[in-house]
Amino acid sequence: MIDNNQPRIRKKLMPSLKGAYLKASATVEGAIVIPIVLFAILTIIYLLQIVAIETRINAALFETARRCSSYAYIYENVKEDAAYLNSLSTNTNNTNTQSSANTIKAIAMSGINDGIFLGMFIDNLGSDFASKNHIVGGNAGFVLLRSSILNNNSQIKVCLDYVIDNPFDIFGLSLVKKKTELVTDGWLGEDKDAFEEFAGDEDDDYVYITKDGEVYHRDASCTYLTRDVLSSSFSNIENVRNQSGAKYYPCDSCKAEINSGIVYYTSYGTRYHNSEECGQLHRDILRVPLSSVANRRPCSKCAGE
Image 1 (cartoon, rainbow, N blue to C red):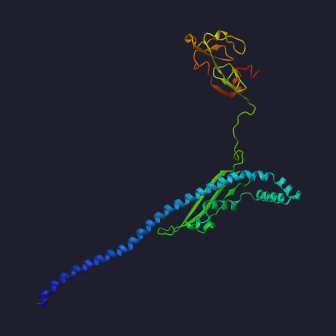
Image 2 (cartoon, one colour):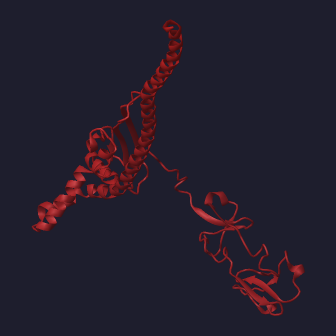
């Protein structure tokens, strides 16, 4: 009887053992895979954080370069007057003047070097930014060895190297090396180095003309060129005279429309007009080289020769 029951017991035990095995297997796989997946997600998130760090550093670098560009004018002018400042420091007995001259002279001699630029950059960035954002070496991790700042010219070329430590290293990205380059010019009030602005023929002079006119003018505000429009009643225009004493006659363009009412004229013209909008009352003034108007005569008022 015992032998008859043994197979039945075995059949009941086998499914239980199989279910227990499957549950344990899933638990082990989950314990291995889930941390890896989470770690990978954190790594990707930190890569986005690296982009934000780089953006902040680039903004601080640009602001520092902008400030140095404005300081360059002061530095350049002090440098030019170094001999005068030196004479102040050696010839005067005034201690305050002597001290100020020595200080300015020292700035002129040293200029805006890499060390000064780096100090200004860290000030813009924040003294604790590097340590809080895993910059290797902290503030000392910002390297400007390949930079050239106002090196005998007006150009500011900055090459910033730094390394970001990735605390979530899973793909071999424990250290992320970054490099930023920026080039600008100091604000010296001068032309850019090696740049020659095209100025045309220096001997060429400019004059003012109208499209349909026959003369040229030296003065853009010549009264023959710019017209002050005056008005009069149609019945009184016969009694009005221009600056030369001449009478006014109907405009060839709008005379057919003149019957009565108000008419318009200019002090130096010889025509009166029905409307202020008449094309003969208004001119497009052009500024052109004198050499291009050889076929026009000079204005008798402002360009008489």
